[in-house]
Length: 151
Image (tube, rainbow, N blue to C red; front, side, top):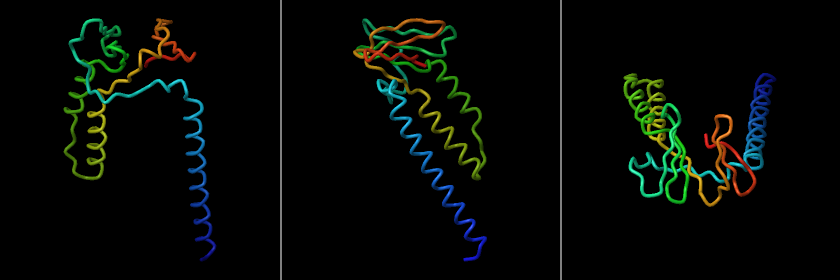
């Protein structure tokens, strides 16, 4: 192998080592620094029911784009049904007819967005100590002593 080939091989190995270190540090940070999100469970429910049962509550923001729903023993937060329908209609109106690589990537991304746009973040109610409105944000105080916003 000549000097140029060795140089490119060395650079490739360096790049792989940098990627491995970044992945390790990112995973460590996710595990050790993101503990406040341990109460989060992302639900596969596409949309929450429009009609709620006795004792259930739905709260919208000012323009009805986001909602927080108390259903039984959990709190769900996410995009409102109105916003989900708007995004899906927007995606459907901008479908590409390109059959090349760009069109395939576009269809893959828009399909993933369209399928997952209605997912709600669910929080178990038993882990919540208090919910309060603070400077335009809805804050949740957890029994574990942490707090963060729902959105």
